[in-house]
Length: 256
Image 1 (cartoon, rainbow, N blue to C red):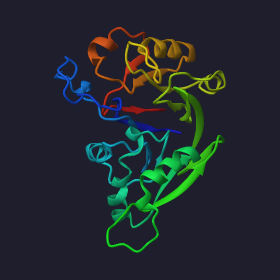
Image 2: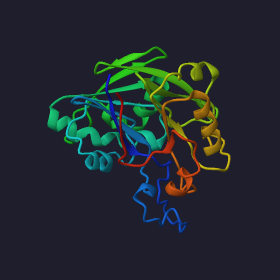
Image 3: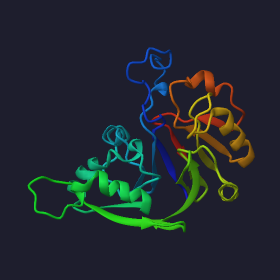
Image 4: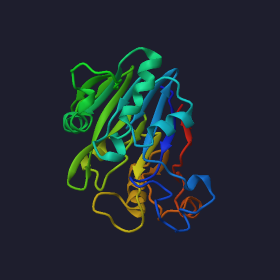
């Protein structure tokens, strides 16, 4: 199963540059230090699947040249992962079809509340996203012929999900990975891990913690994402062990 993965965003919830900040990373001229909110595009052949619709969704899909969308899969319901959902409307227009979305029940409850106008059945004179809602559980599920295996992780005290798709796994927000989930992350070609910053955080993994996780799991290639402005790309990546890298916006990764 050959996949192409495009990093649509590698930043934290505030993005980089962060509003009002004068730090060196926020003023960096290295394009790899410009980070939109965290999301990836998964492509197999002509199929386009996005994980999470960030507040930067419109800019991300324009930059990636995405002209059709087959599905959106959600990790959890925080603002930086769902607030761009309204921007699926142009895909509805182009494709003359509903866009399937996949979410766990707790995630969809928040999406249903935040985007209540989408699910309001009263007659209206404005357009809203047209969605086919798929509630998923802990078992693997099919998205356009790709098997998505939910990987439970802890995001502070909240249980959320990453996903394994073949030999690729995407874990964008985590402070701890249960042992049962670690066991399901062996034998990977590509692994994405949260690596917020150096200083400990109650809901995210630090750079050092994620390096330790990566060395334990021994994926062929590990990429850190969900990074704040504490981590300059060039200086930070130079300190990482072989096979471990920082993701950056627009990066493309292909699997065999």
